Structures are given as structure tokens and as C-alpha cells.
Image (cartoon, rainbow, N blue to C red; front, top):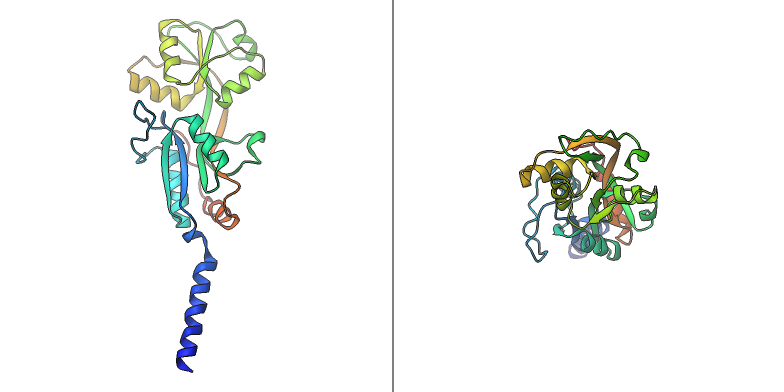
Length: 240
């Protein structure tokens, strides 16, 4: 009878362990773009150099996932690779990601992780006055390929020369090949610092946007709920 009771207790304990679930889920892979203050570089072949990034969004993501006690890894890749994998695979996530209507069926958005600004930059000595979309008409403008900011401008009828590497836009701006550069404030600051180029002039702050951790919605429902619940806490600003 004692042995039977012990076996029942063991079975109950195992049931509780496995029903709690989230800490024994398949390992999560969190994709992160390899660029800027939010993003850390890879080698020339696009292979991840390090996932030991310490920017505000990475710190926030680690804080959230550590609360859930799920096994995870942060993998650094180019944006197209990162987005494709996170969009098509369960137990995958991606950050930093802006929340847009077309992504709501693909991702569960966790956060916000940070806030940054959409900014139109000109050369430091430029006297261009820009404070509306109309002021951008007729200008040679450089932007980051597939970014939400670039997509917004093109949808408004503004022509943007898109490049897959935003750092090249600062070089083009500095050398006079474009009149304005549209990017995020943290990207501009990081790129100028790393390239040792003069910081461009912020001619117009279009708006502030929040960025999130996006988790593929095919991920286990209990795990998704646990991650969302773990995300409660103060907003970490990009200026922190």
C-alpha cells in the first residue's frame, strides 16, 4: 500500500511538472537584425558573430524570456532572413518589430520594448526646411529597404531610393548624392558614430513609434500567454 501511494504521489508530481509546460517547450529561436543600436553586425557572409548584444531591446527581450524560464537563443541575421524565418516557423520570434495591421495574423506582439523616432535627416550645413511630406517632394531621398518608415513614405507618393544597408545612405548623404536620409534616430546616431561621419541634421521628426518582440502565432498557446504575461513592466525608451 505504501509503494502504491508513493507511485501515485510520483505520478501526480510528474503531471504537475508537465502540465505547467512552458519551461519544457521546444527551444525558442529569436531572430534579430544584425545592424545599428538595435542590431549587431555579422561577418561578410551574413553568419552570426555573436548574440551577446547589450542594447535596450535585447536586454528587454532577455528579461521577458528569463521570467518565463524557456530555453531560447538569439540569432543575428539580415532582416530578410530573420523576417522570413520568424514568419514561417513556430517557436520563432523577431525583434525589434513595429506593429502593423498586415502582421497581426502572423505575430503575437510582446512589449513595447522601446520607442524611437522616424526622422528626416539632411547634411549638417544644409538649409533645407522640411516639416511636411510636401517638403519632401522633388528631393533625392535615401531610405532603408523594406522599413516601415520607407513603406509609409512610398505609400504617400514620396519617391525613396531604398538600400539594403542603411549605413550607405549616410555616406550618400555626406557626399551629396542625396538631399535627405529617412531613418530611425537610433540608427542615425549609431551609424554616424561607428563610421566616424558628422552627425546629420535632424530636419523633421515625423513621429515616434514603438517596437516589439513578435512571436510566431503558431507557437504553443500556453507559451505565448506566458511570454505576454511576463512582458508587463516599464517601457524602456531608446534614450536609456
